[in-house]
Length: 402
Ligand code: ADP
Ligand code: MG
Image 1 (cartoon, helix red, strand yellow):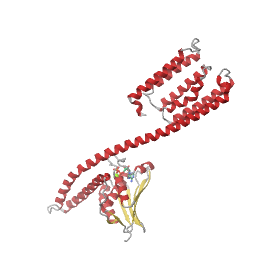
Image 2 (tube, protein in one colour):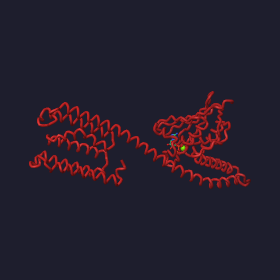
Image 3 (cartoon, helix red, strand yellow):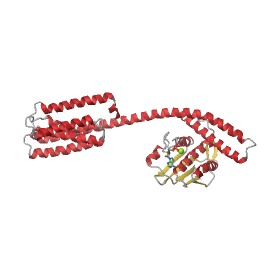
Image 4 (tube, helix red, strand yellow):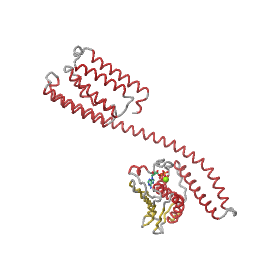
């Protein structure tokens, strides 16, 4: 309940607490039958008023679970003490019935059940005491009736808590989602604006590289490096287009027959240089020639993201296996790594924009992959176990006439 700290709520809280403290103090001094004797009972009453008052006033500063439990216990002790000290005051029993309602204000299910259980145990002990020793307690006049009333009230309180808690939880969830959507919208706009600005320098760099690539004075070895750089820049450019198209998807990517083996070959070649930097090995097994209907650049993008993730998840020197197989209906590509793996919850988050556990991750890779797969009626399935590794299965409809 972070709203608690808004000024208005704080003022209201202190106003109500001061009123309560005044009422508790009035109970101590006004027409109190035990006031004259200053016996142990009266001292206990005074002590509990002081302790409860301090707890209530300090609560906004120490909004912890332990402090809440302390408040529940002290408040229960206070009301039970009043009940036992002043057997003639009938309303003391009503307070006992309603003790769990105070814990509703903490909006915490466990604390509420704790308070409900504590109160039921306390009342049972109280009843046993009254049956055995308490002649002058008015509840004894209709013991069974009062017991039924007490538990009836507990059921009503439970019902009220159950309804309000459920509603508040739902509202909290809705509010969180709203905030998250708003945050994503803003970040999305920002990312799109930045991406747009990055495009221009990329074009300039690419232009110069292309110029050098065709320069006869440049030796072939360098030219191959330039080609690699140009390819990478093309990829970067494509990612930017993807990012920009998330808000406004365009469907004019040309669909062609993609030779999965060729694409995997070029992607693994490209990544091998990246993988080798970390001494990783990429093993490629393509059993048959597999063809799918898609856009080559996009399919490249998809494999690149998934295999790059596999390398990044692996330990230095770790193996990444890429296999492709086909049956009558599907082409199935599997990327297996033996790296850090993911928990079930982490797998569920995959594809959420900006979800990344890496310090330099963008958290856009998997979102783009899912979008591409969906576009060509494909599917991506993760099998992962924490600490053991991950297998990503990518399935596309096989091109039928081949
Ligand atoms: P990025 O790579 O920029 O972090 P991605 O969308 O590609 O974004 O991946 C999101 C997150 O999913 C990664 O940060 C990583 O934690 C997790 N992830 C993806 N693939 C794997 C994998 N093969 N093994 C372990 N974690 C993975
Ligand atoms: Mg990635």
